Every structure is written in C-alpha cells, then in structure tokens.
Image (cartoon, rainbow, N blue to C red; front, side):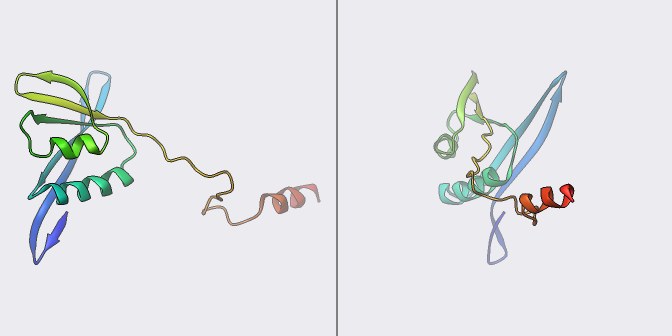
Length: 114
C-alpha cells in the first residue's frame, strides 16, 4: 500500500482460489494512477513466489501496466480477460553463498574426518 499524507494511493490484494484439484492465486489491483500501480506490482512480484492470475475488464486502465509486468493473455470471456504470470525463480550466481550458512564447507568436511 502506498500512503501519502495519510491517504491511501493504492491497494493490492491476493487471494487463494481452490477449485477441485486446482489452486490459483488471484490479484486485485486498485490505484489512482499507472505509476502507483507499477510500483505496487513491482514490490509484489519481488516477494510473491507463486503463479498469479488477474481477471480484469478489457477497458481496465491498468491493462498496459499488467502486460509490461509480464502478465500474458490466458482467456477471454465477454468484456473480461484472464491474464496469467508464471513465477520464475531468480537465478543465483554460482559464487553466491547462502546467507544462512555461516561456515565454509571445507571446514565442515575436515571436522568430520577427524
């Protein structure tokens, strides 16, 4: 949520939909302008690790922002479209260490050999 002088400029909500054996996560976006919607989506997509769906009207003012953020057309129904964004895990560099692992692996194997 973006807050400016105590006023809410935008809101994102994500909910889980379960139907049969299918689980989908849907996004609802409300903001005053494209810039705020873009910033909110950027933060969400950095932190959300599931595939996302969004159902919007064809004349929705944020349709361009959603497409720029990687949402693609999945299906259409009357005046609405279903957009989908596949989660892609970030690629770790080979020399990047796990921040939760504080010891060098060579010292661990040396301790086991003793």
